Image (cartoon, rainbow over all chains, first blue to last red; front, top):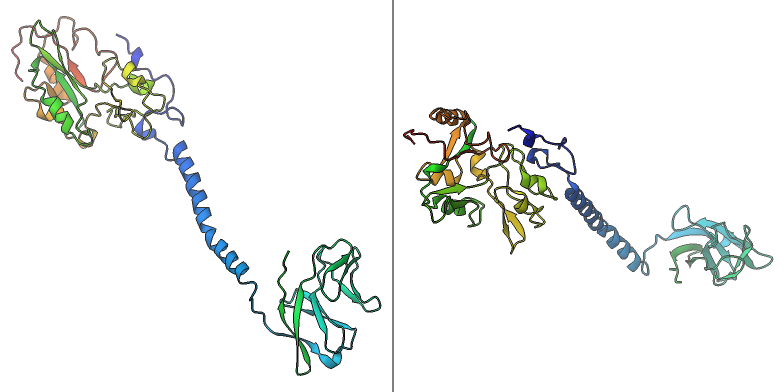
Length: 174
Length: 186
C-alpha cells in the first residue's frame, strides 16, 4: 500500500556499502591492495639492475684498474720521510712513507676508527692518529693500539725512472 | 526509449521456450535463470513464467555482505560478481521470489541479469524475444499503460491486490484474475 518498502535507508554512495554499479569506486580496497603489491613488485624488479651493478663491482674488485698516479720524485723524498697525496680520488687522502732506499709504503691515511688523518711520526717510527691515539704498523698498516680495528688500505707503489707512482689499492679483506 | 519486461501471465502456454532461450543468452553458461511454474498443479494446466523482477530496492543486493549484486543504471539487478561473491547464499534466502540460484560447484550465486548485454542497448532479453505466446513482452511504459486501459478493474488497481508485489519492481507483472469478460487481443 504505502511505499515504505522503497525507502532507501541511508545514502549509499559510499565506500563500504554500495550496490549501485555506477557508484563503484575506481579504487576499491582490493584494487588498492593490488596496486600496493604491484608497486612493491615494480620496486623490487627495478632494484635488480642496481644489484647487478653491485655484484659486478664486488666481483671485479680484485682486478680493478686504477689510473697510475705520480706521487713524487724519488729525489724529493728522503729516507724516513713521508709525503701526502691523494689516491685514487682527489678526496682519498693518502700518505707515502719511504722506509729505506728501495722500500716505500703507502696507505690511505683516513683512520679506520673515525677517519681522522693518520700521520707519520718519524721519531717513533709509527703511524699515529691524533684523534684517539690509534696507532698503525707502518710495514703492514695493521692497527696496533687504540680504537681502530681494521688495517689502513694499502696502496701499491712502483718506482719508475726517478719517480714514485701509485698503481693500485689493496682490497680490504675482513 | 526505455523499455521494460512485462509479464502477461495468463498467456503462458508452458512451452518452456524462455528457459531454453535463457540457457543460450550470452554469459549464462548454458544455465537457465528463470522458472516456469504450474499455477495449480494437478488442478489445471495453467503455467506461469517467473524471472527476476529486478526490484527497485532489491532484497538480494541488500542482504549481500560483499555487495556482489549490483544495480545497473538501467535498473536491472545484475548477477553476482564472480570476484566478489563469497557463496554465503544470503541472497537465495532473502529473495521473496526465490530467484537467485546457487552453483555449489563454483560456490557462486547466479541469477537473471535481464540479459544486460542486450537490454543495455535496447534489445529485448532472450526470454522475451522467443516467447511464442506474448507472455513475456518488451514494452515502453506507454504501451504498458495502454494495456492497463483495456481492463476495467473493480478495485481500480492494475494488479489484483497491490500496486506492486513485495516492493516496486522494474519488471511489470500483470497478475491473472483481472480478466473480466474482456476478449484479449495480444
